Length: 358
Image (cartoon, rainbow, N blue to C red; front, top):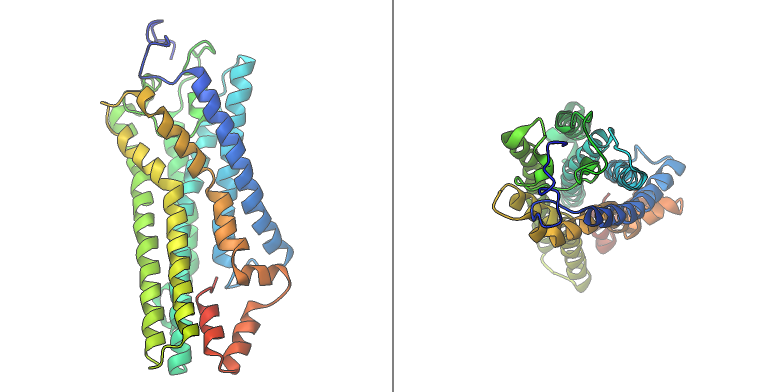
């Protein structure tokens, strides 16, 4: 980074973020990551305290919140490191690794969110078919054979984290010639998409093509997760509505249950999209070298606000907003309540539990 000319580092350069702008980004990431740490951590503490980690109702939620918690912790650590080293006049050599872990855990959360949606679909399908045909199809799906379910979870954790950390270590600068007067010092401490023409990336060992590959490896799983989550919840809603109508008479309570399933699916998809659509747009824009860095600063701010809030929003909609999770907190067994409602032929109650299965 010492190769920069004085004119390149001047405040007139449109292809570099200024120190005060980066400080604003770091403070935003500190605040939003703290909210996510608090939110995801609260869910994890409840689950661990009630010893419900391996519960079929809670396991998908626990994994998702754990990924959110770890990502938020590394985001917080990196942002604090940027603030500390920049104001203290030193250069950090650890940020490439910490931001690598953060990116990896976020990618894990993409696949874990899709797995959560798929678990919902299977649980709804199993409970509704069990009620209709007196059999359970859950044990016959490929997903639950030979512990493939747990293999999917392992791969969701290992592959993104390992790949992201390996890439970030490659991106890490040599560091020996860095100076705190360089506007690019500690640049890697802030997790965000950097433009191809961002001057602070000129010394990256990945080069232009390598940086594009790194971005694509983040963007593609994100797009796949967005599409998968939306499609799975649409299929869940259609299945739920189909089985409801198969009984002939469509009561008011059944209509309310169908509406509840639809609204939940839309809410889960909308929150995921809200968190990551700014990052997706920024990532796609960053593949071009025709957009000046200063022109997208506002989008970077929006991305920092929404993406790092994922842990907090997930804890609300997947955890505290759900009846079954609140039942776990209050020592109630959601399985018992489902079994009781089924035994008493309360179709609305059992279907309502099926719509809120995890």
